Image (tube, rainbow, N blue to C red; front, side, top):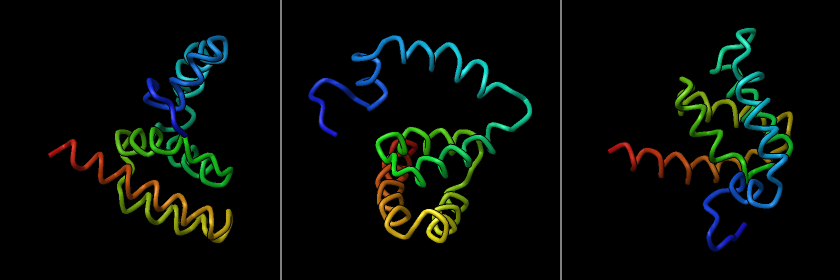
Length: 112
């Protein structure tokens, strides 16, 4: 995905579909992500798995970073991607592995 002045897929969507962005900002995060029925860590694992299974790799970097912030370890993300190979397919897992490698190396470098 290539956008000259857009730093993320979410920002590209926000620019083109502000009503969709408002729905995410007003419903998804304050209501769904805040529901105490699931821990943030569990929500992150579920979200990462759903993005990988659905082939939605543009959104994956942001949710990998969120997963780390929510307490999921790099080893757990690696194990989840490996596990998903058997349920979502090897191509999905291999593509997700490449995205995770690039994203988590970038995140690791920014923490140093």
